Image (cartoon, rainbow, N blue to C red; front, side, top):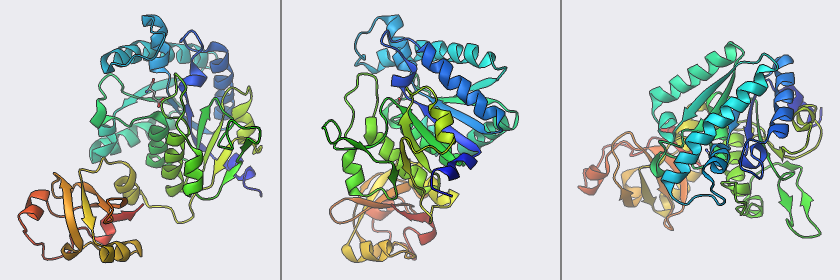
Amino acid sequence: MNKRSALTKASRIVIKLGTGILTNTDKRPHLPRMTHLIRQICELRERGKEIILVSSGAVGAGRGVLGFDKKPKSLADLQACAAIGQLRLMSTYENLFSIYNQNIAQILLTHDDLEDHDRYLNARSSLLSLLKHRIIPIINENDVVSVEELKFGDNDRLSALVAALLPADLLILLTTVDGLMENFGTPEQKIIHTVEQIDSQISQLANGTHSDTAVGGMKTKILAAEIAVHSGIPMLIANGTHKEILCDLLAGKEIGTLFRPDKNYLPARKRRIAFFHHPRGSIIVDPGACKALRSGGASLLFPGILSIQGNFEEGDVVSVCDADEREFARGIIKISSQDLHSHTIPEDDVIHCNDLVIL
Ligand code: GLU
C-alpha cells in the first residue's frame, strides 16, 4: 500500500477550513464553496467517517457587516467582527448541513480550556459524545473572550491540538494554495508532496503569508504539523478551492502536501506537556545538563541550572533552554521560582525525566 492510499482508512478526521476558503471578496460566507465542502463532508459521514471541523472565518465573515475594508487593528473591533461573523457562519453551516439531515454543534474554546486538566478532559468527552451521536462538531477559538495570554493564536494550531486531544487519525488543513512549495513565487515553483521529517529546510520554506484574511500562512501550518506528527497523526495541507478536494484526498490521490507521522510519537501525557501549555517560565541549563537531557532518560538536577526566568509555581510547565536561551525541552517543575531564587536546594530532581519532553 502506498503512503497516500493508507489515508483512505482514516476514520476520525479533523478538517480545518481557513478564512480564505470560507469567505468571499465581500467578506461574507462563500456559499458555493461551502456547499461543495459540506456535500463532501456528508458523503464521508455516510461512509462512516467521524468528522470534526475547525472553522475559521468568523472575523472575516463579520467584517463585511461592519464595513471594514481592511482587517481592523483594535482587538475590540476584531472581537466585534468575530461575534457577528461566528453567528453568520454557523447559520450558513446549519442551513447547508440540514440539506443532508446532518446535525452539527458549535464548540468555542480558549487556550485556557485545554491547559486546565479538568477542562481538557471535559472538552474531550463532550467531543467524543457528539461523535458517538453522529453530530459534526464545529470548533473555533472563542475570539470574543480570548486575550493574548489565553489565545491559541491561530486555528492551524487549534486544529492540531484538537487532533492530538481526541486523538484523530488524520488532520487536513484546507487553504487557498496547493500545499507547501519549493521556490514559491518563481517559475521553478514546485509542490512538495511528502514531508518525511520537519527539518530546518522545511521550516524555512514556510514564510508567513501577507494575505489580508489569513492569520498565519504556511508558518503556522508547519507548527501545526509538528504537533500532529509528534502525536502520531498524519497531516495534509491542500487547496480547498478545488471542487472535490476532500473526496480526492480521502481516495488517496497524490495532491497537497502530506506530513508523515513520527513513528516514535509522544504518549498522551507528554503531548499535553509539550503542546497544551504556555510555559510559565524558563530554566537555562549548562551544556553538560543540556547534553544529558537531550540524550534521553535523564532528569534535570539543581546543579545543572545556570539561571531562571519568570515566576512559576511547583507543578507548572516551564521551558528548558540551552545556554543561548534556545528552548529544547519542556517539563513540569517540582519547585517554585521563588524557592529556586532563595536557594532552597531540592533533595532530588527539579524536573523528573517522566515529566520532561525533548522538543
Ligand atoms: N478565530 C479566527 C476567526 O474565526 C480565525 C483564526 C485563524 O484563522 O487562525 O476569524
